[in-house]
Image (cartoon, rainbow, N blue to C red; front, top):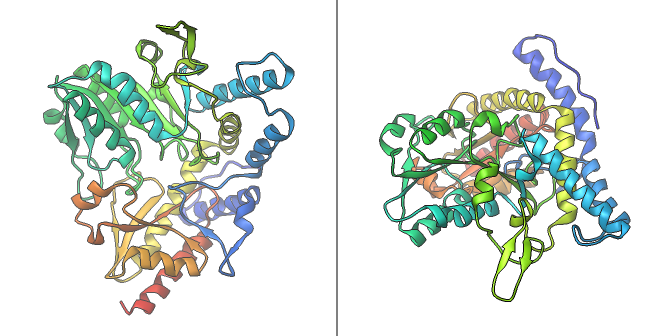
Length: 427
């Protein structure tokens, strides 16, 4: 892994230059960044959808299948014990990454989406009833909206929503009205995948607890990009995905307070999650096994820990600072383009920037940029209600999202590509 050095105090331009130099070194860890698309060097700016993978992660995945491929928790032979040890060691690494006080409170899931569904069904169906309320926000990803809709329909609960200001921040003044003794769950994103807005989770969690509500945090966009401490946030549940933080797809984490997890019934039944099985009843294993029915995604769970260690080696504070500097530069370059509208301007935003160009459909823009080797995302980004609330034309937008390996040159190429598209469409 590339060595990172501490930076002295410098001007903004000098700071960006130093971070850029270090990003150039980090790029050497990612084989895919050497490829070309349409005979142009790849410029990968779709990191909010998924990040690229460093060689150390790819090697660890191959190592499992080549050297100790076996099922976990079920065998006493050498390969099974090695796999089990690696699997549980990864749990410790990932739990440490979010400062979980106990690795047993970290549940391996397929994704943030599965984590939301697990809590909605395993906790929500037991504790929410008619007359209860679930407080969300208009900026939620569909993954942190649809499962609560399903639960509300099942139990007769009501959904309420915090609105979004013009700058993309939450209307926190609504808390005094919408957060009441009827509220039993507050479920919010830590960082918006469309606007980059970082929400004040600790403040909201404290308000939720004051009325007796639980606090669920969708941290899919924050955990890869900043230091996240579940104890400091004072939340009750926190979910995130491995593939957005240099890990593989199909693996994620759900952290919950031990007392809450122990009180919950399983989400799925099957092998591994049992204590005893009789013909007419069963008892459950302790956490975390109670929520990990069946053969897990062993290889990807093991590599999840490798990805967490890789990011820790770079330093989450360094990653956050690099992205803040480069995001400001990205916004400056986009603001130079006539007819381009950027959505959201909340301070302290993350590295996802959504925008539209005059009468050019964002999908058409993405196609033009792809021909330049530039990968961005276009569409509603699984935030259809947010696009409606902000009256965004076409109900969709273009999005450029940055990560630790992105550079000044890549931002400049994006700006040049948009200008080329602008000329092509005559806007």
